[in-house]
Image 1 (spheres, rainbow, N blue to C red):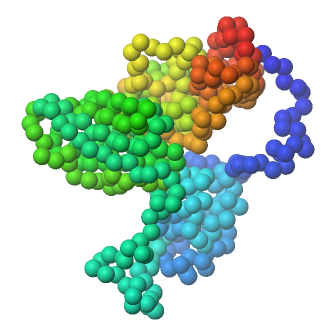
Image 2 (tube, rainbow, N blue to C red):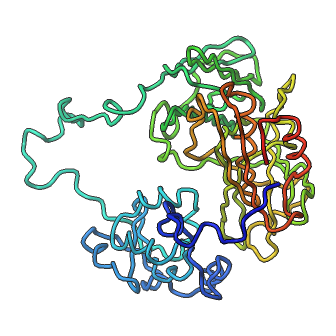
Image 3 (tube, rainbow, N blue to C red):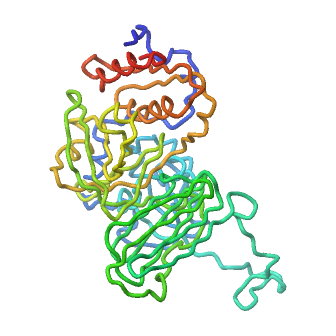
Amino acid sequence: MLNVPSQSFPGPSSQQRVSSGGRSKVPLKQGRSLMDWIRLTKSGKDLTGLKGRLIEVTEEELKKHNKKDDCWICIRGFVYNVSPYMEYHPGGEEELMSAAGSDGTDLFDQVHRWVNYESMLKECLVGRMAVKPAFPKDYHEEKRLLNGMLPKSQVTDPLAKEGPSSPSYDWFQTDALVTIVIYTKQKDIYLDSVIADHRDDSFRAETVIKDYSYLIHIALSHEIQEDFSVRVVENVGKIEIVLKKKENTSWKCLGHPLENHNSLIPKKDTGLYYRKCQLISKEDVTHDTKLFCLMLPPSTHLQVPTGLHVYFKLTITGTEIVKPYTPISDSLFSEFKEPVLPNNKYIYFLIKIYPAGLFTPELDHLQIGDYVSVSNPEGNFKISQFQDLEDLFLLAAGTGFTPMVKVLSYALTHIPSLRKVKLMFFNKTEDDIIWRNQLEKLAFKDKSTYF
């Protein structure tokens, strides 16, 4: 194991301390925790200043509310008075004030896309933004709508100039099966590029193509069985999803389109889609870290790509709380062998339990058989940046080790050019080191790996 120098890290004058590249948490005053905020929202106190009224907000009105003690922010067309939330915000007042009196949707998506703001700020809701008229009064006659459609010269396709070409789909059937075929027109499509869910009578399949998502979202015309299969022909980018009919009858149509069906949209605009996963087991790994095993529903196909994470959602005292976690495997060594029949129905997570925390104690109190809502994979990591890699250096601290498990596995099994891997793993005590014995065995087994 690595002996860490006694001086603080990063160094007092290092660039990491002088200017952090990302979002940093701000120490909160006592009594300003997330649980304190939840208590305040349940207290019945008027947090909007409007005594329970909801109003229609114009852009001019929104701009007026741009001060710390009078701060309104618009998110996806809804306006919130976030002044009461200022002292409870982990990112600090400055982050909120950067969107004061304006539309903060883009800023929110960059920093907080996973947060359920509707639940967190529901008592701060001022109202909706006023709808602008479709055209200004002095709009020229020749630019008006023609039979409800704009002239072709005025129609703009945001994907025409950037992003991948839009996929297409088709379907066919036998007496027992329905097969949906998606033609992505891409070559870098794999099984973990496809997330599919069957819920009630609706079927949703999302194919991730670079920074976009292609959606199939339909209310099926007939009932199907819970389980289905997904196959990807990687060299041509074709996806086949095989559904099993409940009755051997002929379908006249696949179903009726639902929201965003047959569309290619930026991934950031798809929102987080959740399904309920059952807790199968939890085991102690260290004195405060546990290995959780969740089982996906039989009606879900989901594989989390290397370097990405998912979000857990629990309802705590009536408020939906969301936290990110990176899946791993049940042991470090199981990452380095391919099972004969891969079972992708189980997801494992190493999670540190904070006794004074809000989320992890609730997670730890779950009984075997209980359910947790798990989102689609999220993150910006691109495995393509590993191509032709010769030396890999990984930095991790505590449970920050979890994202490194799949990265380490992928590097040692899929990068022939790799010469050396080093993992610098920081922990408070030796008892905090996750999978210490497994790491030492791996280093002994693979002489190019150092811990």
